[in-house]
Amino acid sequence: MAEAAAQGRPVAALTGAGISAESGIPTFRGPSGLWKGFRPEELATPQAFQRDPEGVWEWYHWRRGLVTAAEPNPGHYALAALEHHFRQEHQEDHLVTVITQNVDGLHRRAGSENLIEIHGTLLDSRCTRCSHGETIPPEASGLVYCSACGALARPAVVWFGESLPPDAWRAAYRRSAEAAVMLVVGTSAVVHPAAGLIELAAQAGAVIIEVNPEPSGMAGWARYALRAKAGEALPQLLAQAGVPIP
Ligand code: OAD
Image (cartoon, rainbow, N blue to C red; front, side, top):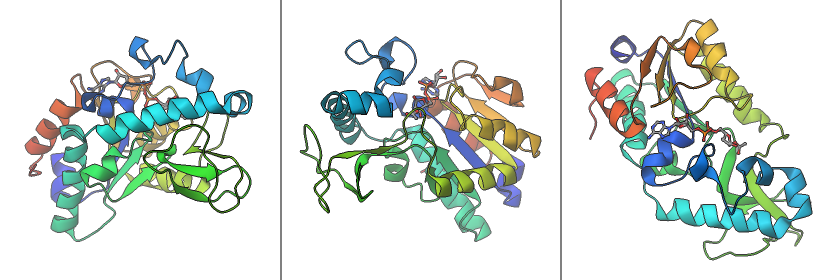
């Protein structure tokens, strides 16, 4: 990491729900991931939305409430600081990329700009008829309708069984293949194709550093494993690599 920071080599960070756990947002897997007895895999599908759009919207309104009330934590801020440090030191905007599976918007609020949200964002809706995308009004509840054509809208996120937005996926693929270092932070790395980016980066020569109290499904690719919380381990790692953390 220190070498990449000194020489301005590209760094990609692949993040998952664990980086937002210290902001009070429940992860998906494990007992705290349940909502009214449902597993996320049962709600985050096109079939669930077809069967029960009110129920699915209720879950997303609840999650949107949680994330808007939450604040980014030192893990999010450390990744934003890394990007800004590289930009300043090496005069290049795209050396540090955060590729997140999270839909909570906390990386952006922490200041990450070169950010790829491969699973979309729960702050926006997308029309089921005309695909118009817009920010969901903070006070919205119940079903959400498109302001352009009036049809039913859905959360602007990727559900199980759907493909990732092609532009976001292409960018994530390229940044992973180019990375000299990939930080894998707070993800169980069992959901594909996102988890496949770790193998891609490793096979293209990246040093994989996993930051997670538990080994992920891709831990075998990691050269280093920091078995600690992201909000503690990331600021320490970056400080050791000479990156100032404000
Ligand atoms: P998971 O809930 O599967 O995994 C969270 C990971 O974070 C686990 O490996 C935990 O050990 C780890 N963790 C918990 N607290 C942590 C902390 N403070 N610091 C670091 N790590 C911590 O979440 P994801 O891997 O993000 O997809 O799940 C991937 C995808 O599955 C999500 O994007 C979502 C979900 O269904 C879609 O909605 C399409």
